[in-house]
Image (cartoon, rainbow, N blue to C red; front, side, top):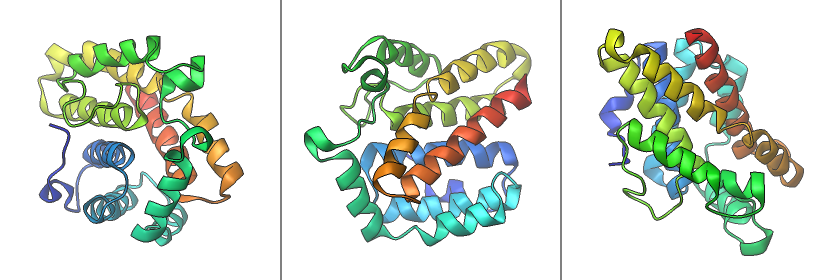
Length: 204
């Protein structure tokens, strides 16, 4: 089930768990849109990341100042939910111009491999940005909790493959910035790109 208990996002986690919860929280935000619960989870998640050194104090302050539920909801709607003028959150659309293409099939395999049944709580295709973020969070959780000797190489391979499906989000962040300079969504996508690649580099 695609969800996070608020008790999971208490402070003083390891950096690995901070990163895991950060990606899961972002997954829920982009899948479901901003809600009071998601914003609360994200607020705690950013504080976790700051304390663990995953984001700088300046990044934390800038992102935290933008965590206004009304503004986040308005921007989410105007950016991603206005039909033909909206920005797509699907990798297939960015890479091929069409929905539900090869990237979706690749993500479906990764999601199944990491134990997340596709479309459990959503009818969105598996290459939706929210699913990609949540998948990365689940892979980080699996690496943290399971027998590393048994799963090490498999998990690193799946994690590297999942992170490779974020390359298009640089284009998304730029497109958001073109419409709303300094917008929360462009900032958080850029931070997520950096953290995902740092995670891969750490495990190489």
